[in-house]
Length: 490
Ligand code: BG6
Image 1 (cartoon, rainbow, N blue to C red):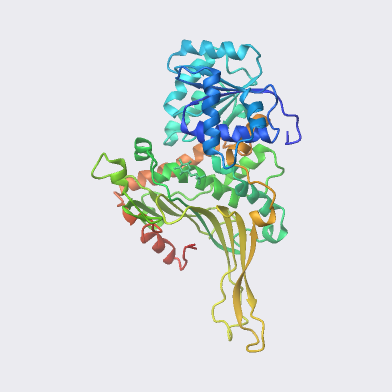
Image 2: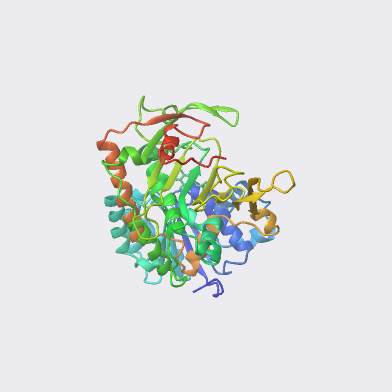
């Protein structure tokens, strides 16, 4: 299956239609798919929630959401076409018998169903019960699951078992929205279609790799969720480990979903365990204090959650990761992510080993390491740093580090970078699973993360505090410094 296949008609059911995800991401993304002619004219989008709305009211509300959350002016012709697809069904998901209303709508014109669970995971059991009772999970039907899936290996297994009773693995689409980002998708092309990279992508040439996801936002009102979750479960278990596995994976035999996912899985299985023995040398955890961000004083994490005097939840994590396989043995991967940091940006930095001998030592004592910076967001692009001779007669071999720069916006001037959810929804319609996380990947990631969280608890590791608006706790610099390395800061 590929992007050339015919677009079919589906019924997309959004459980959690009144929620933030649906308003901010899903509906604006679906509107864009309409604009790009990627929705069949008979496709229906059925919002499910607890509200006395009819389709007219729902359409009014969605129109406002699209106006508010799209980066462009709404096009009324497209909107008119799109709005006809929208229906609403008032259901209390805890009341299984109320699913009969949904069944009635579906059976007016039974197509393949795509059930989107945009609701907290504790509702999944009730959702499954309703779907099963009213036969909304026929063998061709699909389910899309939003993260988080569990908060430990045990709880994620429980969810996976529950869902697998209704849907086969090839009908389950587990979202990690980072996988839908254009720049993440490009990692495969970058690595596997350029021999200069492909032949230099291993411990033979690479010194170390840094992956940073730095956020300006705090916890945005998600008090109890974040207090239970922390940055490790919120960002590392999914987004960072997924990026790491794509960066490190070997070429799949082709682009079929299972082959890509199996290569990522091999990496996740090769991560060296971090436990009580190496927790202090390999991880840093921090929490933000009040500080100034974009000229505004923002409260500390504790003030933001407003419940306790003390919380042990981390809002910043830095980890030194080792991959124990032939290709990556000896190459540290440093991951860091935090909330309320100085700038919102995500990037991967690949540092190459030095040349074996410095022929130019008379002119430049230390040659800088070649590095590639992959800017995932914002200002999407790639910078390659090389050493070059400064032109002129003053010195024969005066060298300088220079930057070769590729910028998406300049190179692809007339092309829009689509939102991750547009691609993910489209792929789920097409039945393509490569950008979704397999059950095995999720479970192996949780196993690795559980060990770290367990070690933090049993070693009573202390939180390091950092001021909002900074780069995180200072100790995160030491994590690299003791290996003779430094974070690439903006
Ligand atoms: C989500 C996390 O998965 O990703 C949020 O739950 C986080 O806490 C968000 O802020 C970051 O996504 P993006 O696309 O803005 O980098």
